[in-house]
Image: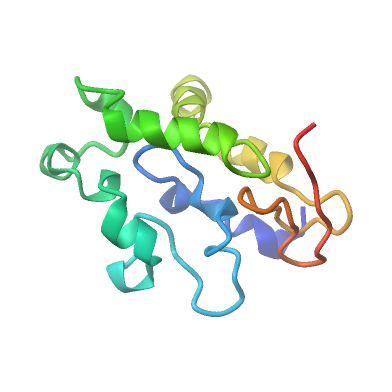
Length: 145
C-alpha cells in the first residue's frame, strides 16, 4: 500500500460499532474529509451526526468503553441495523461486528494491517470505498466477488 494511504488506517478511524470509517466515501474525499466517528462533530456527515446514535450512546460514553462489544447489551438494535446495512446495501461488504471480533482476536495493530491490505486498490495502491467500490485515487472499481 502506498505509505500515504496507510495513515488513513488508524485506531481512531475504527468506530465504536467496529465500522472502519477509513473506507467511507466521506473519509476518502479530498476536501472536507470526515475524520470518523471519533473525530470532531463538525466534520461528521449529516447521517453520522444526526441519525446514527452509536457514537453518542449514553452507555458507551459513560462507561469509557472503546467499543460496543464491551456492553452487556451488545449487539443492540443499532449495531444489528448497521451490520445488516453494510452486509447488503453497499457495493463492497463490511462487517462491523466481524471487525470487532477480529480486533479482539488479533489486536488492533494486526486488524489494521489486514484492513490496509483488504481495502487496497489493485491498480494503484490507493484505498477502495466500501460504499461505491471505487478507488479514491485512480477511480478503479471493484465489485463484490
